Length: 286
Image 1 (cartoon, rainbow, N blue to C red):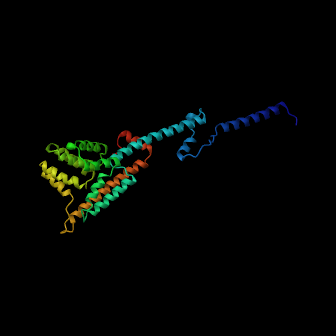
Image 2 (image 1 turned 30 degrees about the horizontal axis):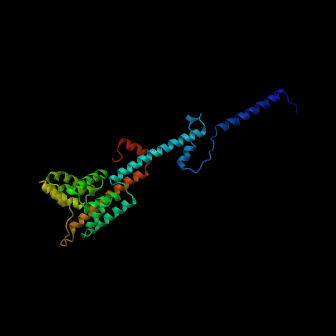
Image 3 (image 1 turned 135 degrees about the vertical axis):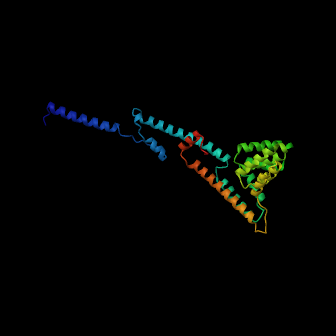
């Protein structure tokens, strides 16, 4: 074959065009990074190509996006822990132990239909339904008392602040204030009302409210709480009133359990973004 200048120029242009085409295709083809096994979400972040970073090296883009991902993850984890702590204080976050406590409580309530045997067991359950340290402190109060019950009052005050959803410290504080005299009766009534607001079937707090309102010269309230109190056993009518009280108590306990399950599910399942938005607006518990 005889190569003329025109022929040489033609083949040179064709060769250059092919090289440019291949180079361009390679330049805009995403590089496959070899990395350890990742979650689906992290993997999607690694292989996402953002046009705003077209001038950056691929590894820089990957590093930046992973840092962004883990920063969000750390932020949501911190927020999640805060929400769990608040839910626990409100008695609205359930662990396996918490579920066992609630199940046992409903069983003990049901046994009250025809017997008073479970009364002491329920009081003990309410005393120990928080963490070990709080339970130990509550049990210690039953064995030893400081002069003037000063230490016990301070400890119960702290517990009501630390665990606003725990009924028993409110009930114990109400009883302590009642024994301090007339000046403390209104506050004692307030603490007892908080206790039954948290646990409407708290028979000790209900009985105390009957006495407190008699002392406060409020017979209407005294009668109201008397009607809400645990009725005595009565063989004459086959414990009809007691059974109705037990049924109402079990329904209330089951409803609060359901609300706690719902709150627990929201905390453990919802996406971090919803945590951030709701916490920022302060309406997570709304």
